[in-house]
Length: 453
Image 1 (cartoon, rainbow, N blue to C red):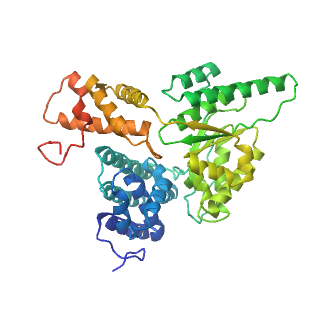
Image 2: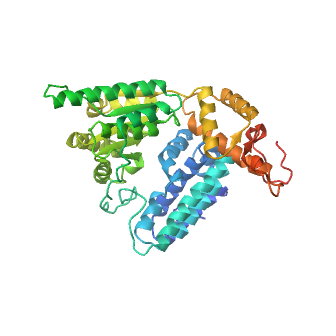
Image 3: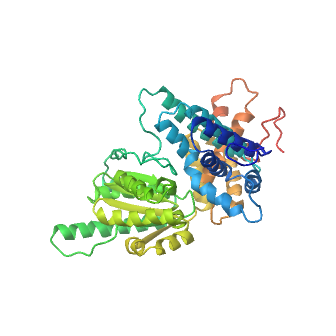
């Protein structure tokens, strides 16, 4: 027995959900194999943080476990943006006004449900999956209620892998609130940790400020590269600092708008040679007057489609040298190899800024700050428990830093709610206070006992 996508029907929950997704794709008029690939990638991104998930994913997608673990992580990296925005095929259905968009979104939600059960998921992973489902359902529902088929979702107006001609790129985002250089640098300095990064940004700011003043005085100045490489683990504030850099460059008079456009490989690369150049240029057009921030940029060095995007980017950087700044970001080793793959990249990205992992004390500050911003108050013993959790974390490549602290908080909030399940009218203190038990191992919320395993 086969699916509409031509493969055998799977007996695993994820495999069955992927089979159903492929069948739904055929019913609504899109490619079943493309839908299945999209579903596999989304599933990997959803299950990425769950121990044991790679092996389960490989089984469900009929890949050999002996050689396929890298395929899982590659798929997860390529689809992380879909955890918070519609997939490419769903975007295509929404953009074209296909009435099957809601049905396809439901099939994607079933894939997310199955993916959330892979391995040994935490409460925070399950909660994040609920958010991913909501994103896709809301996107489809929003289109169903719209009066006109206005293109939304994919900022280039084209789904990756589509054979359609890219739609006209939407206008660039409006410029953010214009703040003074002093205000922006103060916000930079107020960030937790990142001492080395702050020093580098201050030095770069002064270098460019003096260059501008020399030019205004009629003095000869070397042309300094404004493009930057950010390297470091996830959750170390790279995007936040990138947004501040955009504002700082505007305050220096180097950029007109000072906005930031954040993309990854999937938003630059199309499914056919020739289309990638158009797609990349459309993204560049949105970023003119501001900063184009390319996360996990090393993924562009993987194949000929990525190389086409790089070649196009290098040309566009030259054509718009006065109104475009590009920041590429990712892990240190892969980023060094990426920059070395193209002479044009090496000459334009002369400055690399390293984002080091947060210390235990800094992670505690981040956790405490996020908790209070959400109207929770951790007890002193709860913060001590957090310190022990942070000390036990392996700080290798891929450690989530601020994202890890956010996941701990999300899990604590879920356990806090479960702990109060039998309290009909909790007091204000009970509603706000996080106790050490809220940071313990996952509570089994599928039973009435509430016992911690």
